[in-house]
Amino acid sequence: AVVTKKEHLYKILVIGDLGTGKTSIVKRYVHNFFSQNYKATIGVDFALKVLDWDERTKVRLQLWDIAGQERFGQMTRVYYKEAVGAFVVFDLTRNSSFEAVPKWKSDLDNKLVLADGSNIPCVLLANKCDCVKDGLIQSSRTQMDEFARDKGFLAWFETSAKDNIGIDDAANCLVRKILENSEKMLNDREDELRGMRLDDGAGSGAGNGTGGQSGSGFLGGSSGDKKRSCC
Image (cartoon, rainbow, N blue to C red):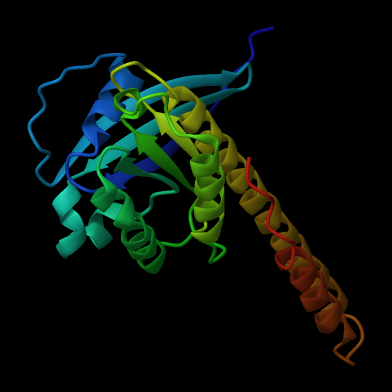
């Protein structure tokens, strides 16, 4: 029998300071292509990546490559709208781009939340690792683990668009979390509807209002679930 795949379309943001390699990462991920010569992005560029995630699931990622200077403009709220995941990119060879990471993350969290009120999953990319001799030393990795955790990132990855390092792993980590969130919200919605039906049924019986209380208790139980840990 032919299995019909369930298709998902997700909007993903790629943000970070000017010149950190955002466009190169997107080009490598979508087209498996790298060039030393890219003009600075003006406003926003788009790319589409299609993933056959498993035998039942196809994922289409709409990647929004947002210009580095846009954090200082008023358009980011428009660009961010309806996104369900993000990459924040910094350049390992340029400390100022790392220092800007908390500002990008804060800007994102202030302007965009998921339907349940939580922050969208966000993965930090330490890009241009090919330019750092021997990569990050272990102590730096430990510090990065702490930094990413402290700032609310799902995970962080060393990446190189030039040498095609870490990008697929980072994307898979993000997509996995987005699919988890999507499933959880669907289940929560079903629980909510079921709770409303229980509420209506019980409320139409006895006039003491206990049916309404049991219904709201059911809802409260579903919405109070702890968030899942990151990948």
